[in-house]
Image 1 (cartoon, rainbow, N blue to C red):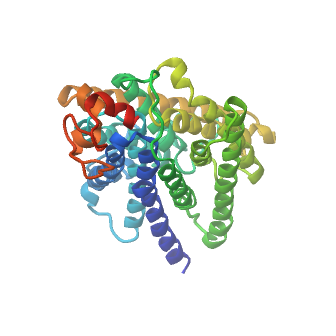
Image 2 (image 1 turned 120 degrees about the vertical axis):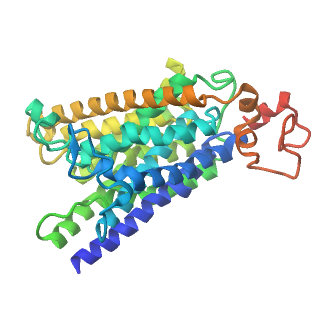
Image 3 (image 1 turned 90 degrees about the vertical axis):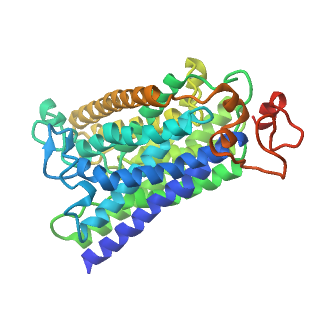
Length: 436
């Protein structure tokens, strides 16, 4: 009965994680973007589900998990190609891990809003998953270089075993670095820093943030790995702690973000609250099973404040991270990963256990950034050579909803096309201001 209950819960958790992407992330990013590209933004999440899901079944699972490890970096993609030989309850694990690949790929899209060609996105995804996501998943969760493996990173450093409960490195640092590399290659949106580019529908964003929060319990609590014995007792105690830590860190991060906003700008905003939710969830992802609730609270306040400060760095350094993937996912993922070395109840520096775990966590984070950066650059340069990366200037000004999909997110019965907007009587010269 214990095995049956765990299998059922894992299927429910997988469904929750999928719900995070469609519709959760689609609504979150769609509302944060501009009205003229809202459908394109949402389509990037839906297409990530389609493409990542197919690729995962074909070779993603095989590259991530298996018995034919290649240099501790990835598994043989042909060992269980097309899930050959995978059957029974093992398919539950495939489904659960597939949803992680889907949302990680979709997260990247927020950085490149308004200017990446949809065809480039479609070609980029399988390349990036193959070069970056599947290898890192194997290295961290599949017994590879960033796990407790002989000749792995921790073994070479002579330091503690790495900790990444649900994806600080594999998901958030990975996606955050990918977003940064892409925005540096793409360049800024037309008008960036000169005209307002505010979220066009904050209620959509807040609904999306709420769905992400709800689905994240599948993300974190569903990542329980059963021990050899006493499964039921371990499941109840560990998952209870993970659920509580996930909640505590998130509510504290909202507070941390809003405090910074109030001090800097004099107002606490709905966008800040929604962003604080995501920042807290990101930071607790790798550490949810390693911290006490007090540690989770401290982490939440700190990461909320740091991410609130980090999102403004794009204006200082001039990189156009449209929907703050770098400021939230990369920074939040780094803070959550490194904080384990400080706040973990078993091995943390603040608990008197020395710096061994901290050294490991910093080294893992740096290695993950390096791997993701190189892999993303290679994938993006291939895409650029094959189909190009950036949409035409005219298409970007008009909005990618029509130029890429032939549709409008808000069609009030007017003609939509070259020289026309969904706003009656609006021409190319004026519609960008109306849609900003």
